Length: 197
Image 1 (tube, one colour):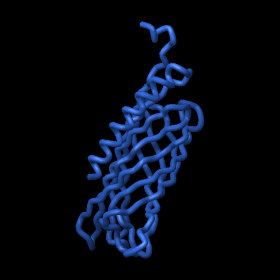
Image 2 (spheres, helix red, strand yellow):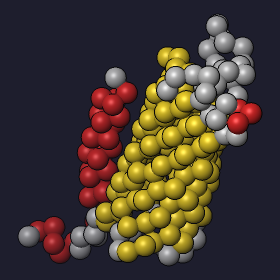
Image 3 (tube, one colour):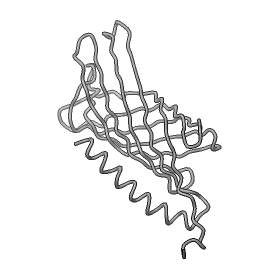
Image 4 (cartoon, one colour):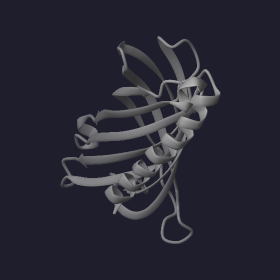
C-alpha cells in the first residue's frame, strides 16, 4: 500500500511539475527543477540499550516551480533490531516543503513535512510496527554541488508522532541525521519566439 501510494504521488507530482514547469518557464527567467534523491541513516546504541540498531533508507522526489521553494514526496523504509527483539521493518510516506537559502554552490535548507506510517515510538519500548500513525517532521540541512546536477545532502530531521485519540498515551519523537545524494534536472526556459516553431 505504501509503495503504491508513493509511486502514485510521484507520478502526479511529475505530471503537475511538467505542466507548471512549462508555464513558468515561458513566463519567467527562473528554470524550474525536478530533484530525485536517496539517503541513508544508521543509528546504533550502546550495550545498556541492548545494542539497538536502526537503519533507514529514504527515497524522495521534489519539484521547484519557483525560486527557492521545493515541494515533494518522501518514502522511508526503517529497519531496527536489538538484543531483546527480532528485526522489525516499518515505513513512512508523506509530503514535504523546503526553502533553499544561500548561493547555488551551498544552500541552507529548512524543511517541514507531514507523514503517515507504522513506525511506533510508543512508551519506553523499542520502536515497533503499528498501523495508522501520523507524523509532523521538522528539520534543516545543507546541500552542496558535487558535479553538474549531482548534490550532497547533509540534514537533521525530527519526526513527532501524532497519536490517535484511543489506544496510545505516549510516543517520543525520533531524530535522524541524513546523508544523501540528489540529482537535479532543470527545465530550461523557452523563449517566446520558440513557441511558434
